[in-house]
Amino acid sequence: MRAAVIEEHGEPLTIQDVPYPEPQPDQVVIETEACGVCRSDWHAWQGDWEWFGIQTGPGQILGHEPAGVVADVGADVEQFSEGDRVTVPFHLGDGSCQYCQRGHANICETSMPLGFLEAAPGAFAEAFPVREADFNCVTLPDAVDFTEMAGLGCRFMTAYHALTDRATLRPGDAVAIHGCGGVGLSAVHIADALGAEPIAVDVQDRKLDRARDLGAAATINAAEADNVPGEVHAVTDGGADVAIDALGIAETCRNAVGSLGKQGTHVQVGLTTDDEAGEIPLPVDTMTLQEIDFHGSYGMPPVRYDELFRLIDAGTLDPSQIVGETLALEDVPATLSSMGEYETVGIPVIDEF
Image (cartoon, rainbow, N blue to C red; front, side):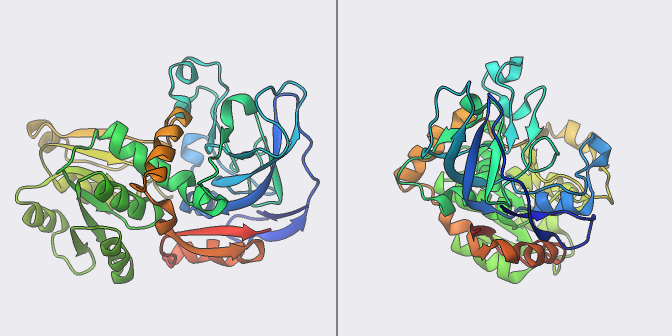
């Protein structure tokens, strides 16, 4: 089968013929119908994240925002059959640790990120295996098509978890969203749909234009602003209730925290680059005196998918609005490279394999 494979960090992925996967007893093999191309794929391709123990090596098949059809089933799998339409979270849980058992499989003790480790080859391929399939696979409703699900994949569901579970978003909240890539634009759409007032911050006007289309109540071009937090405070009359750093660089993280009013909540979604290596200085005294909360947010527990599907079915949320373009597998190397210049708008999705 064909797959897009890392040969060397920073060098273009190559399209190769690789062996078709055989399922282990607990696994299914899914034939990929669609898969998003995410900034996290770009980080892995660059060789980032060694500082927290994950560094994707040569030979890895990337891709962690998939939707597809079950093609082969391991002997111990009970809940899924060939032909089932499914998706999986990018953080594959073991189903047995205390976090999985409590409904927090996104932070499983032995979490295996799809497409980032040799043991979990990803979905930039015609097919891919999924461990503990009975636990990790999620049946895709007929009303949700494959491309839409790939758009929901990592960034949309991450934004949903960040806003609803970590920030406990309320209608009327002012939400400052720093970085309008796929997760940031998803956050704009979700915040607007849930009755909040998103303020979009980015350095590119075309991304801010897209944010306005998705419901941003105000936009700020950080490249033109002398004081980004001050601009947010002016727009919100005293500071945002919730701030999200959807990028993961020192500047956006500090700007997001500075955007908050008293008792505001910051949610860190973006993971850092090699420049920060996981460490960003923050104004701790100010955060203490103003009772500002700082939360991390990683993916979304798969038990929350049903709620997302209900909101999509009701027309409240529409992840297809965040899909920027559809691609063939051959387009992935160039698309991934363009992310270094922040060229993509919305979520690119592969739908031709």
